[in-house]
Image 1: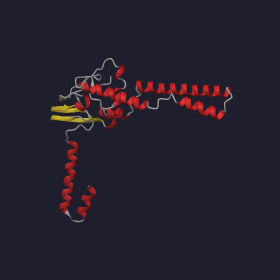
Image 2: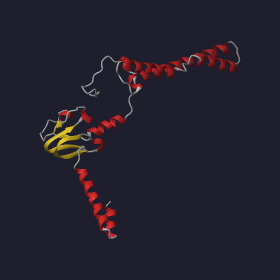
Image 3: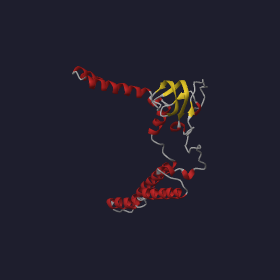
Image 4: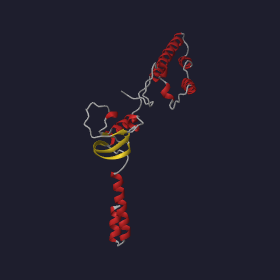
Length: 223
């Protein structure tokens, strides 16, 4: 934009130069005076400043910000002297000093955690163990049948084919489909009880759950 303004001025087009410079100034002002928190900040001045922190804490009511000195161990939701990235100003005005930006902010840490793959569920670990057990049984069965046929003086090639055929038969080829149908059935029953399941994998461990705790907003908080 600055290059375009300089080029217009060099070519003698004063009108375009003024328009471009005006756009640059307005864009700069919008970058400094805004309603969204662009970084984790320390409040230096507050004049009736109320901030909505629902995206970070789950609380729907706006929080009044102040310049009070708070204890280091104060919970994040009660740090009224701080402004967080991703939050929005409801009313008032103030000044703040940017402390952290990007992935180092509290909002950035949450987004970084969401990028990591979820740990393997107990249900999947059980299916994996069951699969390994079937493989071991199949191998032992194949070896035993092959050894018996060879002992009975059957042709080696025929004995190999026969042992492989018998070993493969116990393998549950429709096991993935059976698991998917059962999980889908569980999801349907949960819908009948007014519980919406967005991901089928989320109900894999519900069978071993005794108690589910959440806050008043329905948010599951790690801690």
